[in-house]
Image (tube, rainbow, N blue to C red; front, side, top):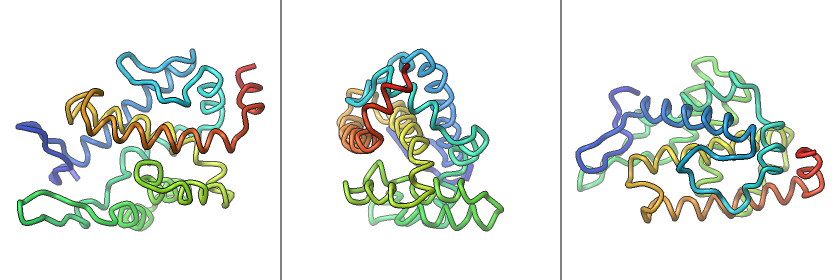
Length: 197
């Protein structure tokens, strides 16, 4: 993972391992800020963010060790999924499933494997894909972790690709606005307000 380049931006590059560390660092910063209903400094607030939503999401996060292992290793299958196009650019088709299978083979827990397998749903999945998360016990229990992980990842990636004003970030943030609104709507406004208490 240290030798597999995840992304290049100009002269800068980031390995799969460095990306996992950046996302975990963002997630930890997010948990600290969210405890007071805030976001880390410089983060763009999603449309669904509020102190009440932050409190509810914090109360429903998977175990910290589960999240740490998921975030560090969520792209562990990318070296096996790597395909170079005609211009030499790296692509990783099906990497979430390859990563989940790899992590399972390495002894990852069922929750970690589920989170890795569903890592891309909030980034690129449809409304139907997102709704499908709520049809299993694992999904109903673990999607709050996916949502804060996705928010952490888009901000970690923004640092690599030109900041929160970049076209890439804005497109990813818009997708996350839609999926977060969908999932939090399913959780129910009354439950979220009660958590803010």
